[in-house]
Structures are given as structure tokens and as C-alpha cells.
Image 1 (cartoon, rainbow, N blue to C red):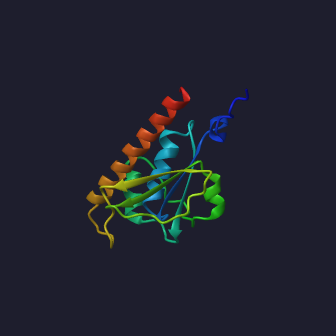
Image 2: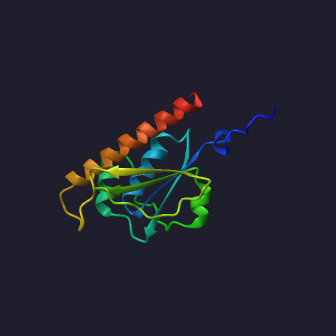
Image 3: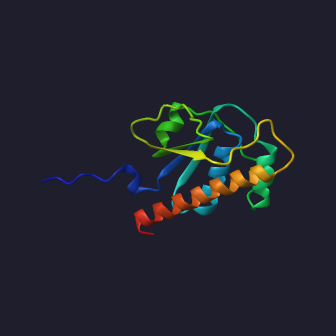
Length: 152
């Protein structure tokens, strides 16, 4: 009787890819917090379906919480980065979806954000903080769950 091999992610840190419509806001927040909260637990990256620059209001509220993301370079989602991931987390506000083809080798989770970012951007940072805090809570819970699963 042969034993089934554990999934490849059990032999190394799982790879999480955060994907949003663009890689200048939601996915950058999630990636920054994942690097801060779970560097010993996961490898992380982010990408977007279209190009954009980093949202300055997002950078400002992240700096308020001690995360400097000003040097992050947003990038487009590609087949290469999708196949790199063990888990693809798509992020979108208010029931919107992120249409990306998830490869069969990866799991998919969609984070439907209750607190979206204003478009066009506004001076008041309150909605940015609400979105930041919601994503941080989700990242923290994800890291907690991975640690429980892996026995950390």
C-alpha cells in the first residue's frame, strides 16, 4: 500500500499571491502585511490585472501603521506568477470579482472587502484606513490558520 505524497506546499513555505484589478492598492496592502506578520510562514507576492502606480493615499496609511511600501513596484499578473502560487487570493470591494484564470495547481480564495477604496481618490484618509485594517485582519487570520495547520 503506497502512501500519498503530501502537497508540495508542505515541504516548504506556501506561496501566496494576492491579485486585484490593479497592483497599486489592495494587493500591495495584503502583501505588505503578509511580509510583516508571516515572514516565517509564507512566501508572498502580488500582481494586478492592469498596470497602475502605487496609490499615494494607500502608501500614506500604510506608513501610519509602520509599513513603508513606497518602493514597491506594481506588476501585471502572468501565467508564470500564477503557477508560482499555491494559493491565489483575489481582493475586490463590494462583491466585485477579479477575473483571473487560476491554475489547477493552486487553491483560490476571494476576499470580498466590505471597505473599498474611493475612486477617484479623496483627501480624507478614513476610508483608506478602514480598508487597510480590514485587509490586515484577514492577513492575520490567514497566518494564524497556516500556523495552526503546520503546527507552529
